[in-house]
Image (cartoon, rainbow, N blue to C red; front, side, top):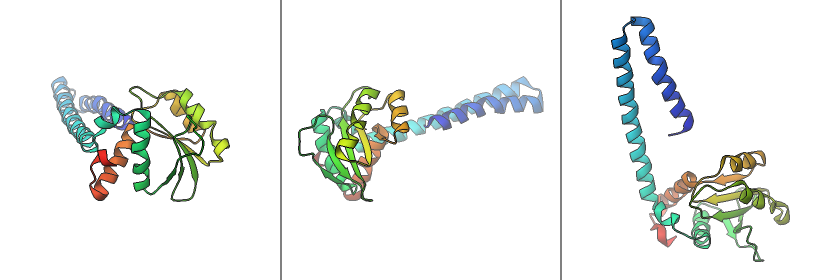
Length: 187
């Protein structure tokens, strides 16, 4: 559930009983309204959780969580190719970037794929950003099987970088899977 939707639901959970009290001046009605709202919120939360678990199960993300950096790179390159990007390995052995990418619109991007079991921090994002001039790239992407720290997201937003986290990665996998229905481990 997005943070914005979550906050809106909680605001509604609080405001609706207040309006009910203003209209009825009856605490029992207010309490009953609040209980019904909590029940609806819990049911919605359970459906959302079921949907998220199904996406994770369909994408087989648990396999990806166990991959090393190199294995995740080898998994991601064909995935991006199937999504319409042109992927090339850099000539020199540069640990700071995983591969070069040409978008369908013709923009050149440098990409770093990082396997993490916790959030990706700002240092990695800054290190990759410094490589843009060296490769004369228009875009800079960092792809991970986890999430990013708030500072990393701020830095990326300020510098027009693209951070691909767990949720978008799952969406890519499902999109490719729905195209030809390949087994994820064979990508």
